[in-house]
Length: 469
Image 1 (tube, one colour):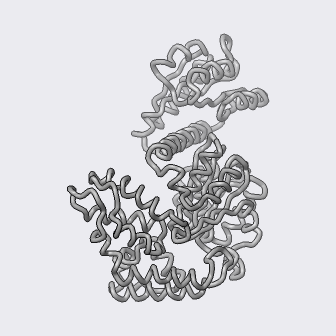
Image 2: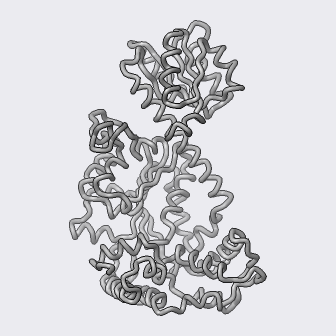
Image 3: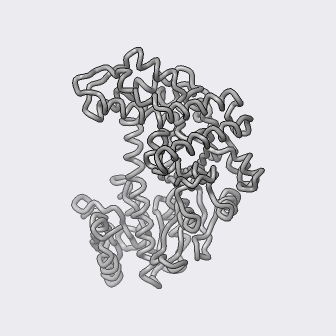
């Protein structure tokens, strides 16, 4: 967070020791925060309306009003305001009691190092940023994202399972093909859980192997080259909330061992640190791979698999969700049309027949992209999506992708541990290789033709040992 952002974060320092108030305000102002200092609880309450602090740093023992009394009074008016309690050495038990009353952290005075104060405040800043983002997401979930009947169209059993597991602490493993909505389902689980903490996401496939542990567990200042300051990891940021580990099958084996420890002991250390940090974050993981096959190939730990799959949920591909394609497509047409300023409100019978007949190997993500492209191609005067706007679906490579799914369905179920995966992979590999050849190795063009993201194509190239040239 740059100083420009810190200037919007307001801190109120409360202590009857004037020199300490002056010292703390000086340190925090130097960091770029908007800081005020007062010398009693009643003074703090008097400035609440005008100053509206994000954080109050208060002494525990003060003559007119204790820190706990101030905390309780402020929380009754502004429950979103966070507290850090200052306490003298030897009164730690009282500080713990303050945390039970709602304080986020405590510091022992006299402070041995200003860095203690900086880190404690930084933790609050990061927490409030995530909480704000999480609040925005929840609003989007109810106001802007698909309603439950659209998300779970053709997946009534999945909806039943989610309702059963959401308000428990059980670790959930979401399995299914790319584009089936695993990230969205993870967010639904978090919302239904009622957890007050943030929803924190990490894509394991997108992180370099040498950085994934730092992202998960954080690092101490100087832990490695470039670690210029202490950083909290995803597990710390997800305290009282949910951490979503997407594409867990891509996590390196060394990191898998450390994740296993967190699942077993609910504790970890930052990279380069010695202090043990506990976590109560709820874990939801997701994969589009057959983890049992990866276990046989010694690419995934068997003990981690069983720790993750306490409550496995399989998300079926769109082609197996009876009646879902029509329902989802109709919703997307109205939603995307509104976003793009068009007036299309329905799909022509021939276009709907074409959408229904296609196998959608990229699942909902591909369906969304196809409808978005068709609407962009439509004139502003049109109010019906015509079959002509879906002509791009007839290209050989798009049809090859759909054909591979038909072959896969004919050979086996496609579910985790099912048969027929080899034949499907061969067809997919051939389609990718042929597309790359026709585009002369241009990966972005190849990804567009295949109806997948560039990141997914890069993963497939690595999986099938294709050069992409």
